[in-house]
Amino acid sequence: MSLVACRTVISGSEVRKGRTVASPPAAPGTLTATAGDGQASLSWVASATSGVTYLIKRVNQDTVVATTAAGVTTKVITGLTNGVTYNFQVYAVGASGAVSSPSNVGTAVPAPAGSTGISTYWGYNSATATDKGDRSIDSMTGKKAKLGNRAPVVRVYGSSGLQRSFTPTTTTCPEKRVVYSYKAGGSWSETELANGAAIGDMIAWLQDIPAGWIVFWVYHHEPNSPSVPGGMEVDPTNFVNTYHQMRLALNAATLATGVKVYITCNFMDYQTAGGTHYPTTTSTWSDTWVPSRSDCDLLTFDAYGNPGQNTSASGSNKYGGPATGSAYDTTYPLPSVRYANMFQVIERCGYADAWGILEVNSPLRNWDTNEAGRVAWHQDTIALFLTPPMTGSVPPKVFLMWEGVSGVNWNQGYGQNTHPAKNGHYSPYTDGSGSPLWAVWSPYMTAMPTTG
Image (cartoon, rainbow, N blue to C red):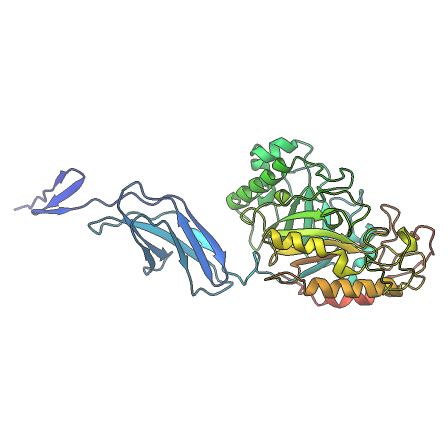
């Protein structure tokens, strides 16, 4: 005799042997996981089934790590270990206890306070207008900054706007660490970058980064250029919206093994304010130019002891030379005064724990024949940046010196002063060891790990 199993379905529920078994609710929508310090913040789109509660599991572990009440679609999971990858899924639970299929997988890697969870990355800006793409490090203007036979982080620039392929290689950046800046141009206009038309190329570029690279990804470095006093070289709304597209692209990209990409927004510090501290600058800064923390990992600045700008509001000649005067005939600025506005901007915009410096230098002054004043200025500047006067602050996450001996008629070279200060002296160093500034920078760079 054969047995036939019978069941009846009534209004979406199964009736088995006289009892009703509820159908499972609809699965939750897209799950997003955001890492924090020892925790992960989860949010998801509500199930289409009304009145459901939710339970959260780690993938491949049949253990419920959290639950929520009906209608609650967020949860912070605490007690996690920093540096460990956590994969979560969310399930909807109906009134009868029926459980839905899972959401997508949300992944988070908790990290210490600060948006990136990284230590300070030291390095240098290697590029002039012609030092783009894949050039041998020994043919670059910045070759003398290869301290201790190392090039920890190198800053290079895209040559023709947004690309689909990742051009820096280990020829340019031997340790696979790069600050890479691009602008509108080539295939994409400023507006198209901002409205999402270029997101496919953004994703392609990200997915072309070889395994193991660390990339600080910058759009339109120095957008508040002095070429547009008091404003931006790009439309501010387009600028901020482009950073949102970069975040969407990074979220959608499948990165190669070990690749880390930090979305970075960079401004010129001496354009952050005008007035007493910046007497020759007419800049009118706006915090609205800064992307939100949800779209940007790091807020960085190019920081200079520009001659003739904020040289010494207090009349101090701490570093030697005249306390008054102009340009290359005056002293170096007091860092605490020179960078006060920059730190205020960083703190106001919520980046005190996620900031950096992509260029720092002070051009040589005419009177400073042995560079003693310049060295002392750099030492004080480094000390200030490592203990910045901001609430909840940390040292800079990336800290690059400017290594250039050409440019805007400034003597900016570290150890290769082939361009004299304006009306100043000439010091033809033969190698890095000949520069007094070498001793200032080399301990920081040579102490960097060789990986990660």
